[in-house]
Image 1 (cartoon, rainbow, N blue to C red):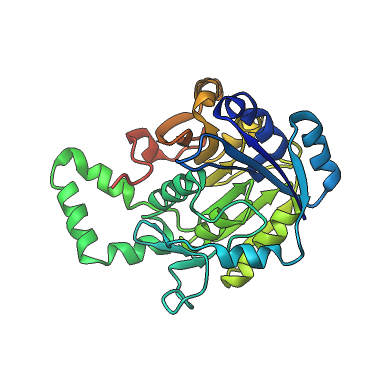
Image 2 (cartoon, rainbow, N blue to C red):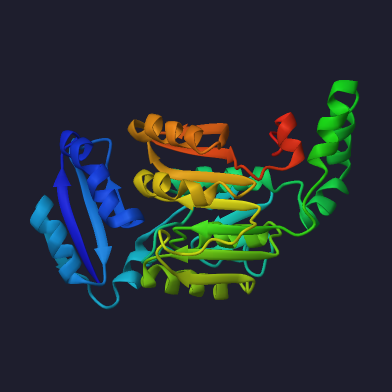
Length: 321
């Protein structure tokens, strides 16, 4: 493994981050500290030749990592668990609290993007949790709780809300998810934990897919189909309930005609200064924005595709509680 690294000012990053992300996708990491003006841009890869192209264009240095770099890096990382609603907790290491628990995921820091802490991943996870909260087998267990029954009774107490509560209760018996730019596989694994019958996870980086497969084995999840593919050429399935896409905005815009066949879209990896361009592209493709979240310089979008369910007509195609 090799890593390209460049110390850069905020001005340099503002001018070059979009171009770097277009080349490297989710492999780009920006490391900044409040007490320092300069940040560090890093891109890891297995091919030194590919990183040389980046260095020739943007400057910086390339370093070969030692064989045990991942073990040493993971050992040095201390992180609090990431809680996603009341249904999932993501850990970086095995503890007595998360061993063999069905509501947890173990995602060590690895060679692929996605441990649940980056804003794009965190926002996507929370949108996915809310969208699937009342679906399938998950819905049955949630509705059996007294607290949930009380909330639905309260929502349905007014005639105007009876239909809304009912629509939240109308989950797909079996739902599928397509995860684009899967990285570590964290969104795909979360979907499996949330009750998806089948998950397809795609990335164009073989290292990312190998890491994602290992994470699935580590968490004993076997209903995820991992594939190495170019999203521009890959034949999308004709019907899909949810598509999650954590990609750079240029690629998102290019493949929107394929994405709009899904009932629900969760889009992330978008910088704030790319928001207007993406919103225009969504409107051109008839995709309705339901919610937009912002965190730092990043945004995530929850949207309804062309094949949206009947409850979307009442703006209740996802529970917002």
